[in-house]
Length: 348
Image (cartoon, rainbow, N blue to C red):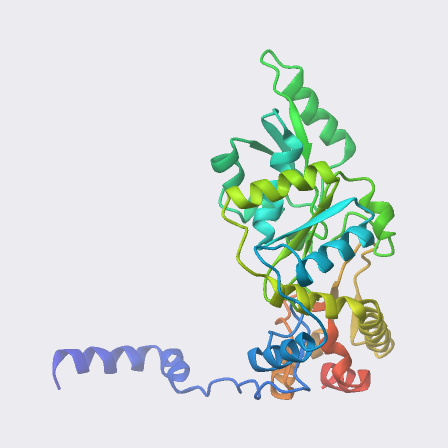
């Protein structure tokens, strides 16, 4: 036996846990994705390229979707529909939410140099300092660890900037809702009036690939003057892509039954949480401003094996933490199976 073999054998003999770990069976894999696959995590099931392409081909037969550099066709129809829905004068398609965020605050800030943002927002945490680097705007972040700042915190930030020895004007306030890093908390109750709430803001940005089946894209709605500026900036930042009709066509179709699908999914979730509570299996954490993310605390006797039970059944769920808490994300896939089936999986 050479020295390497001797050392390996000696280590395995002294640390049996290593040997056991090496021979332990891997966890069972998720079954193949099919029409019954369920994602209790994330906004939806990952898009199926083949099905999405077939759906797009079917929808294209129903109209003339082609746009040219984001003008006309399905893109114009989508912009008009969102402008009406949000109660705004105009609306522009942008290829990414990052660009929509950036363009909005740059327009609204005007000649000012500071913008108030949430510490946990995408604009502050996920966009690689694009706004300060490319537009020279300084982001004043508030409310770390929380969904959003209080009015007093905003007033204090404005006072500090504008009434110091070297006054600096706050040009805009950006508020993202829901806030994923704050457990999906919204800044308004879930039953808020869309147009009424949008009326409180100069511009409103909506992502198109969350719940609306688009492969990419966003819309930014506001006044005609602001959206004209947005289209100009979109071009200057290289965002006036040649065509976006595939995203627009799919999003338009998804809007048609969006409310009905959401209502069905949330109704199924309410049934599930009520059944788990009745069975003593889990408690739902109170969250009056929750979006589609719900936090539950499982009975310790059930928490240990629930992830593997779900895995074998083709249901994605986040592994519960040591205290039994986990998240359940409400989306369309929840309606793919009877609620009783999920209850049985939780109960084991």
